[in-house]
Amino acid sequence: MSKPFKPTTWATLSNATLPAEGAGNQTFDNRILAGAAIGIPAFISYNLGFSLWSFIVLAVALFLPILASVIYLFSRFAPRYRNYIPLPGKPIEHYLTFHDSELKAQYSGRNKIPMETFFEAYFLGKIDFNGNALEIMELRHDWASFQFTFGQFKYFLTQWLPETFWHSREQDENQVRDHYDRGNDFYEAFLGPRMVYTSGIISDPTQRETLEQMQDNKMALICEKLHLKQGEKHLDIGCGWGTLVAYASKNFGSQSTGVTLARNQVAFGEKRIEEWGVKDKANLLCMDYRDIPKGEKYDKITAVEMAEHVGLRRFQTFLKEIYELLEDDGMFYMQVAGLRATWQYEDFIWGLFMAKYIFPGADASTPLYWYLRQLEMAGFEIHNVDTVGVHYSATLQRWYENWMKNKETMRAKYGDKLVRIWEIFLSWSTIISRQGSATCFQITAIKNRNSVDRAKLICNRTNPSTWAKN
Image (cartoon, rainbow, N blue to C red):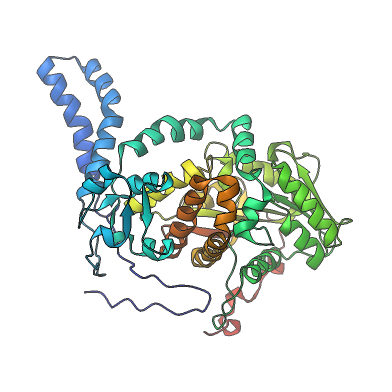
């Protein structure tokens, strides 16, 4: 028996109500998958008298259906792995109200509803929460199952895989503009006045910091990690509404340039730059990152939760382009929303939901080791790494609270379905980032050259006596 769950208390962060463990890679057996992938076509070939080549063709043709079947069976029947958190054991009607007669007949008492079935029905108004969405999602292990469904396999094969392999310029542009040009009022309804769509940072355990304080903490931290100085040329790739560009110019005196594909973001950011009095030091460009002029060199480059949208296929090319844009003694900061390597089925179900409804095309969300290898292969040296998923949870909870305050206004303009999608996104992601299913990596890198002055980067990160004691 493990020690009882006793979380550390921070005023800014809400702790888990029911941090139960689910099934995942610890209970998945690759030997069974391999046996099925080889054994089933071998059995068919033997009984039908197929040749060796026919067996190989059949094995290739059946691999994906066999893979889907094995994953489905494991996700449905595999036991929870070392879970010491008891479930309340309440009937599903305690948590959800069913308005659809078929769903009501199918799911009652202790018969749990697959998570994908639930949220698809919720988006259509066929199901409602009996109370606060976040509070009931915290208890999801008691009323939902994390088994894969046909709809998820279909989406993965017909949409996710083709988009991941293709990732054309046109596809990226359409996805970004469809998402981020929806309307600044839509995003301000949950992001608040800073309009920063990335993780904030908690700094004080004793007070419940506001979203604006957390975002200012994050922007200051980025500039400090980069040793950003007066007059240095700074490029922010995927700058969003330009808040970091304006902040860096205003507070650190940098000559900052931001690049984004979304026209609405540029218009908003240019207004902010003027309001903050840094029009002479900050500017925004509406263009694809692939069109950034190659002749320019920058002292510091940032990509804050943008690199995921580059895609797996183009990631190495993207990093090499950054390498060429960066001065030889410059620094590169990359913040990415990544995943854990020790996965649970919930992680994948949430990831497919995010890819389908929230961030289409952001397929380069991976475990940390992949990002570090990609950076080193592109010629970078890793200076430091921080994992800030728990900070993201606090940020997402603020976004959720803002959204719930403004949802009726948003419903009137954007419709009920989009409001419900964002309610699930923000509530579920608050939990996902706190429990480690997805997280956020802050990676600072330099060029791996003999002539880099590494001594100037020595700081108190390696001096424990200077660290704050909580």
